[in-house]
Length: 348
Length: 120
Image (spheres, rainbow over the protein chains, first blue to last red):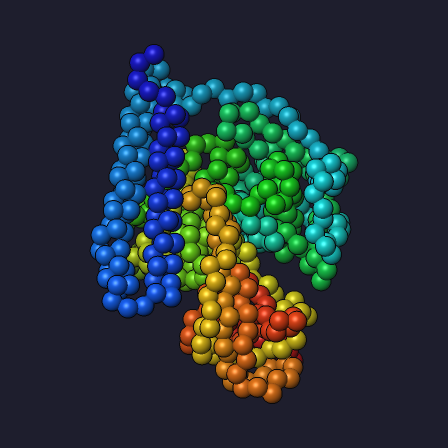
């Protein structure tokens, strides 16, 4: 074999990015703890000054070194893909041939939770919903995150609904027995079809406990099937919109560290995604609370862009659905976007 | 973890005291928040700030009774940190150890007007 396996290079690049992010995370935690520590006096001041001026710089340099390595690997992967495409004479050379769809798991959430010993949260009750699966064309506004820590899943689906609502409609099928089948694309090219009923968990105040929409239930059904796919609602906690893009579209998806990109590159990717009707999202860094109007450890859909003279505006949407604005959207100048977000996600 | 804020009406069901107050002192800040082992490229990793004991100066009581002008409260492990000067509505529950702050976020997540309207 000549050349390289682009998928393997991408995987290595992702590992390097994760390691770089880990160093940055350690840097932030250590620095915050050092400055908050109850240690006063000249020695403490000197140590903190040395930390900020020298030790932190070393950590940041190590993170940069790893990110540079990841960028190089991605470039090599891209060159290899182009070379393979030239050799095969068609764009189909870009992806391994997909296996035929097959149902590899079919279950109901209730039975699944029972068999896996996952207890219902206290006070939660399963109830049927009178809402239709779809109420018109699926949109981002149908997506409201609930009590599961799966903002990335909500964001992934909301972004896809903005880019190409037909993908959402194709993903979920209503069966003749009233159940729903949700089909996911696995990373290995196979597909998983998960069948769930329409009962949803309500909290003790009678409100939907997990993800939901106000006028339809496609997001709630998709999230329920995703919970089965992952092994229960708690198992859905923590993830990346990029993975959800591929899970639904079956297409390659990418992430880039905003710190590694110029504002022009970010703007070009945002406009390319919106104009090309492909999903895009952004993730904040790992901090508590709000900065630049967005929450840490959180993901946002990119739902549009605007230009006002020289000013470039990126429109993002919080998957909470009604915060900070009634529709969850924030119009953010590009320079604020660059400060607010750590990771950009996009799909082909 | 960035879960949606708990609705005002749910907080009101749980709260024993609802006040408008200002943080005047952070008495203790603990390093007791769990550290996530999920990849840093993930969102909803479970990031949280450690618990704090703070002194609140009550500006206005919206519901409940409290004779003291300043009260000590526990901010549990949560997705926010309280700083001196933070101001806004606080929802408080009571435990045998005293007041504990309710809700996932700090006093800026709901406006005073929104809380007052929900109380009417």
